[in-house]
Image (cartoon, rainbow, N blue to C red; front, side, top):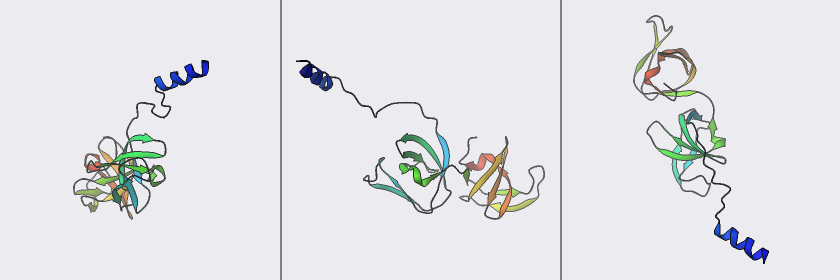
Length: 150
C-alpha cells in the first residue's frame, strides 16, 4: 500500500531536477575558432542556425544550459554554441570608422579603423580603450565599440 501511495505521489507532483531558474548576468566573450557552428537549441542534434567564420568575434552570452551558451551577436541574432567554442578573451568589433590614436591625450593618428574590424581590448577608461588590431596598438573611442560594457 505504501509503494502504491509513493508511486501515485510521484506521478501527481511534477519533479524536474534540471529546470532550475536563476538569474544570469549577461557577459561578453568571443568566438574561439575560425569556424564555429551555432544551433537552434542546446544540443548537437539541433539544426544549425549560423556558422561563424571569424576567430575572436565578440559575442554576448545571455543564458547558460549545461555545456551550452545562448549567445547574441552584433546583429542581434541569438543561437546556442557549445562552451568549447567560446573564449574569455576581451575583443571588440568596430561599429563606425574611427582613428586609432597613438596616445589618447593627443591627435597622433596611427591608423584608421574601419567599420567591422575585430580587435583585442587591452584596457579601457571612461572614454577610450587601448586596443590591438593585428600589429597595431593604440586608443579608440569606446562608444564605437561593440563587445564591451559601456
